[in-house]
Length: 317
Ligand code: TXD
Image (cartoon, rainbow, N blue to C red; front, side, top):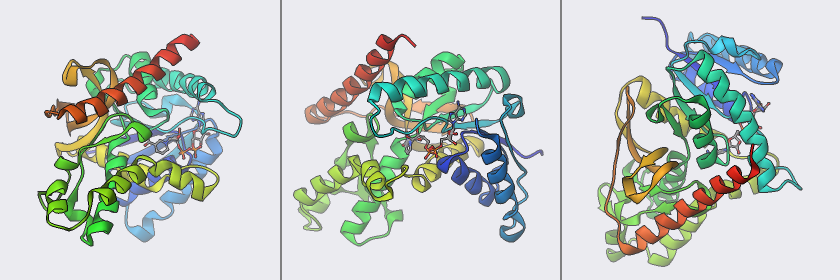
């Protein structure tokens, strides 16, 4: 059986890390597309040259030509601009929407059957633009944010409890970042929910509140440390978990930005909820019951995403 083909649109920090992980995990061959084709080609060659040492045969190329992504099984999109000093949110919205418009055209023309994972910020709006403009079915176009947010939450919980990250699960919904909604009663250590761990004296509500706040600001904490650029190792690992679940039909339950059609009382826009990812793309949306407080937090998060979509529509791009 021929190897799977994975196209990476954007060969920056996350793009390069994605290609490296794809090689190490032997998920398939890689085509990296960038408006700086030399960077894409250089990274592709460099990573391929690590293959003999690490023992993988993935073929990798870098290009500035969309036709090279033809027939890709998976497309992961990181193309875009980060926010620079002096730039408003609208500037970023307009600039990245323009980029995503081009990307959507490329995918529509050359890889209409792919499973598409968008990472570019502002995530919940960009993935919506990507699905609208590419015309691909909504179950094949998803956004990566929740896996990253919940991975950060799991790490901080594991550190607090002094247990392995492997035994910590976290349940996160809503938009990416600030308005993320962690459901602590569905977050567990080996199946024991966090509120029970508080009762058992393993931690306090204050400490959990601080962890939740740190998680929601997880991206900002790293931007501040790096000074130039944003997180890329954990975002890349998170998108790979989603791609792997699709390619291997693992049917993992992962929090992803997906288009809601009435679920959670919301309609026709993208926001993060737990879903089953398998060979069919988004195979099921998991709809849990909220407490009044959780519902208020989720609705607030949805309102923030809808406001950004409205801002975007008002720009008329
Ligand atoms: O959780 C999440 N979704 C995120 C999102 C977590 C971390 C970072 N997140 C966002 O991902 C971040 O705000 C950016 O919008 C993207 C990509 O982050 P990365 O760190 O990889 O950014 P880089 O290194 O600036 O890479 C972007 C690349 C760069 O090589 C540009 O030349 C290229 O995108 N680029 C394009 N490629 C193709 N086509 C067009 N038009 C284009 N414009 C720029």
